[in-house]
Length: 445
Image 1 (spheres, helix red, strand yellow):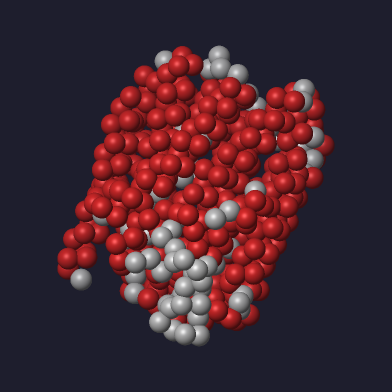
Image 2 (cartoon, helix red, strand yellow):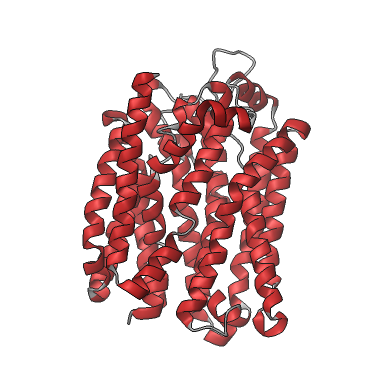
């Protein structure tokens, strides 16, 4: 993961011949490729944490923290705790923005990533139900909530800065850069769990093997912290962030002035965020419970799917710059709606159908998720952009992703796989409705 710092995201951008590009303000010399490095490192580390917990919720937590329940109920309880981080994210954003206003960006970012690292590594030392009883579940819930607070507080404004650095006809291309962190984080997290799950006995994996990904997550957070602080605390970045007014705004004032934008932005990405969990966490849980496919085989197919998603994310930037981000999201929402109709048939179609569901789902996810951020946040005035973008993302995760594995698995287990179709289709309809309302509001404005 640390090799991300040595990658060359300038190849994804139409960067100038020199590494630095002088802006109209001579006091600031920051190239978009430098911003892209910070964005990719930050997002990949956050998604790695995210997927480590999500995979553990399926493979580990039902046995370690809910051994008194059947496997299905234990997984559903684990998914309840999984949602706590998304409930906490908006609170973390608001709290840490207050910290930034008083003590500065460095204190805010350092504190948030420290809390994220401590919460994550503490999970690796947490005894299970057999040792602590119900207290282990309470502690896991608290640590998961703290992860959410930290993730909300880790917003550094670099994605917004990258978007504002985009030329007028390259905004879709620049918007997809931060989204590359999702498949990268998933590939590393899934690959690590796959290695441990395949190499260890079941007893060793459940006893101590599952803890290693959480150690790794802590190490990655440390690398990400220093990489991002190295960027955002320089005088050049401070001047550029202030130039674009990327500073915390009063939340109450933001809600009064642009509260509709927050909701529309969250619902505009709903199809992408719903699909996000239905091709990552949900199928792993469903196949582990009801499929004849070994878990290791499922993880291999999902890793291949994530690799397919990467060119999909990149292609979304090219498509959006030609037909517009709103049109791109709308078309992909329609395709996700069509995909949802075939979901039960594929999931119940044996190993071949299940693999097709995962691979096709990841391909659609790459194309849609690549433009899921920024299509509506561009409507915020400059003084609201920093806070508005953070809260819109938090609400999108809360509405579209927090309860997706819980709802999809619970409904499918009790009412059949048709529930997956209904869930995905409702997300696509909400996205199309939000995009339509946003267009009407733009015309009125």
